[in-house]
Structure formats: structure tokens, C-alpha cells
Length: 324
Image (cartoon, rainbow, N blue to C red; front, top):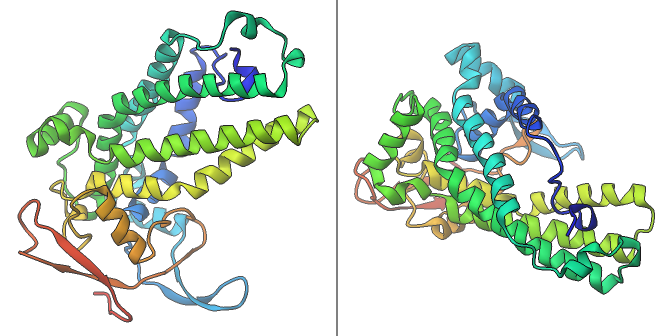
């Protein structure tokens, strides 16, 4: 099936375009750096009284540019690009793996149906082709995420080192050794399950909704692209908490200060992390990096001390707590 029929996979681009995507990632990396720190709960500034756009009183947290200024003050200009190299490795490996896997996977639809002009397809046939393509894209996406996840972990943990000023993750091979030393082979896949679930839910929801809308509601070809973009944005927003949980799990109890009690509890698994963040209203943190409001406060009560590994803790919301 041709990708133009289903609007799922834009696979008709040359390899040189990978460099363009890597360039975009590099330019926007400081924003992602700040977003990850917010997602794992690092707030270097106390909230200040303000009002929302509707005039309601609120506590405001610094936006992305104030946060960047703080990072630059602590680590210098190049500190904003800490973790960029493993990020680029992640992107390059992800894009190349996806292209190779997608091309190798067999097509589920019949050759006769594939060769049929789109205007001659019935609505049911279009949906069937979409379902077949969605299965193929889902498999390719899963393989891509699994292969690239260790490098994604290195990126997130390299960023998290800003909290405790560590240097445990300072290179690709050294970081891979550190992960293996901490948790063995399974350590390379912490945070993978919520990441996989979130990515697949976004893919299935956005593409299915866009196909249904474009098939039954929208006739103008120029509008169909906007429908696809809108559905992707909405699906990403709805399932954003999976990204937060994944990044928290990647950092949690990994030997960095950012992942230990005092900064976050030690979670049993990703569902434990989800339950805790949901209870304190933090599943959406980092979704907005320009205008941010403090939705806490909360505190952590550790059980069994705050030093050893795998010491579990529970966190409880509370009505008022002064921050040091």
C-alpha cells in the first residue's frame, strides 16, 4: 500500500533528509533539555504569586527562557547542550532503523487492492488498507523504540545529572557501562513500557481518527493535511503523561541524585510511578514550558532511609509545605 493512501507513513524521502532532521533536533535541544528537567520534577526556583489569564490568583513557575538562563549561569552556554550527542545518536538510529525495518516488512494487503487507484476504492477498502498499514507501521515503530531506547536513556540521564552535578554519564560507551553496572541487561530498558504504550496510543489514535474524518467528513484535499496534523497534536496531548512517566522511570533510582528520595520516591514499577504522579497532579508537568503554574505542593516520606538502592518510598500530597 502506498503511504499517500493512508496518511500514516511518509516514507518517500531521501537519506540526506536525515541530516536536516538532526539539525532541527540540535537547534531545539535546549528546549528539550529544560522540558526533561521539568518532567523529572526539578524546580530550581520557588513559585511566585501571579494571576492567570482569567484573573484567578496562582503561583507561577519560571518559563523556559528563565530556566535556560539559570542553566547557562551554572554550566555556561554549552551546558545547554549537555546530552546532545546521545540525542542525535538516538534520532539517527531511530530513523535509520525505522526505514530499514519498514522496507523489510511484508505488505498485508493484496496486490490487486494496492494497485487500484485511490479514487476507485470504497470507504471500506480505504479503512482496510489503513488497518493493514497501521499494523506494519506499529511493528516498525516498536522495533525502532526498542533498538534506540538505551541511547534515549543515556540522553535523559545525562540531562538529569544537572540536578546533582554528577558526571556518571559523560560518553556513549562509558554510559552504557554505567547502566550495565547499575542494573545489568534489563537496565537498558527502564521506562520502555510506558514509552511504547504512549507512542502506540498516539499512533493508533491520531491515524485512525484522521482516516475516519478524512474518509467520511472531509472532501477537500487541502484540508486533509490539517486534519492529520490536528489529530496528531491532540493525541500527543492526551497521551503525554506516558512520556512523563517514562522519563521519571528512566531516572528513578539510577544512582543520580535526581532519582533518589528527596527529589522523588523510589517506585516499584511504572504503574506505581503513574499512580503517585496522578495523586499529586503531576502527570502533565512539562507539557507547557512557556507559561507554568505550580500545582503542588507535596512531600516525600522515605521508608528505610534515602541512600541504598531499591528502597521504596511513598509520597503524600499535603496542603502546605515550605521549600528549603
